[in-house]
Image (cartoon, rainbow, N blue to C red; front, top):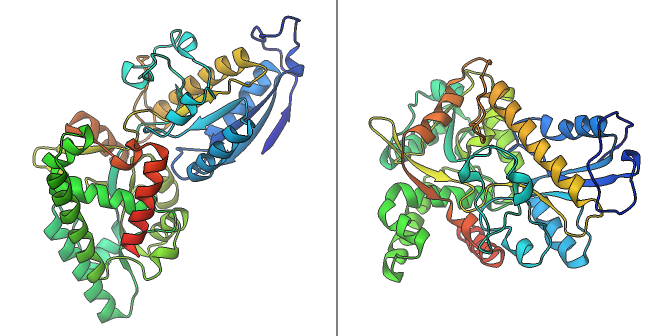
Length: 401
């Protein structure tokens, strides 16, 4: 963590305390997500800027998304939540709302110009999340150097994907290499869940969509899952994945892809900036998952956030709720500006920003996904309540094993 004791000249916000509180007396603990799914280090350093501006003492703890999920579950039970904490998207945060762990923040959001789709309230009509994470969709990434070395083209459908896997296997046998056709890290379960959902969506979109809304019959759901399982099983038998994929975590899988150990990887679009930093403009290509891109630039887009956009929540147990909420809103607006102006990410507000950076085809692809989305579907696992999501994740891990 980073502990800051900075005496700034900014004006403090009103505290809930009856007596006047000086900025230096206000201490806030922040748990923020900072891993490869976050666009850049400014997600951490922006708290430094705010601490200096207002003169608050801000203690920052950074965690990966899985770590923060685990810590929040324990912190709610033990009543040890920090003042401000990141919550993942999807239906996952519902238990926090039900436990009364977060304060309603619509009063603070009403003063902003966030787009309506980022301000979906909970079923009780209140907003508990201040959106701060860039939009993220499912995508396929390809290592362009390996593609050129082996003589491959980006597959547009499932049959071409299987052909690509076969060509990689043949190339390895002929050249004594050990490239993985598809990078996979199942130690954390998440990558396998995404690959499975993308496979189901690409092969049977109609039933997949009805599954999201609960309209699919048991027979249809069973048929879709069986079809997806069969497709993944064929990839396994073709040797598509790294030899030790059950022991590889998601961070290691990303490193393997960057280090040219694998041709393809399925991940979120929010990973693009990390890949650009490590692989450069020409080092990789971003594309629709096979079967999810149509002629004429129409896409079947999988929204990783589903119900709730990832963002910040303020603990109902915080001594400085007012300061924490206003600080979180300012943080979210500042990182949104940086996301758009410096990196070309999608704008979460109605304010006009200009992207002055170099135009990367991978960034343009993300904009194309949203602009030309024929359908926007859910990442099914993110829509489950926590207990059901854990159960499905464990079943998925057993399936890949």
